[in-house]
Length: 70
Image 1 (tube, rainbow, N blue to C red):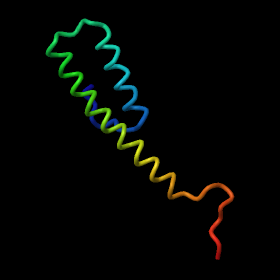
Image 2: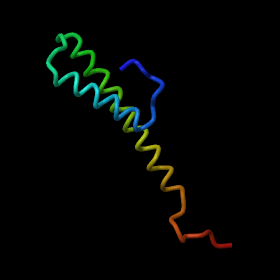
Image 3: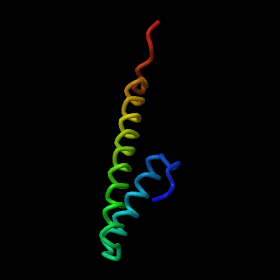
């Protein structure tokens, strides 16, 4: 969870999946689990922002076959 530079959608999803595995394992102390949950909230926010960015970019691109009229 210490790779803040990996903000690609796949990277964020991988980090969330690894965090979920750690939480499910039950091997974390309560403090470590609480910290990991906070990290997950941050990752979820970044993931949502990346999805919003992609959605806005997709709206700006014309649909296939929809050329600009002169």
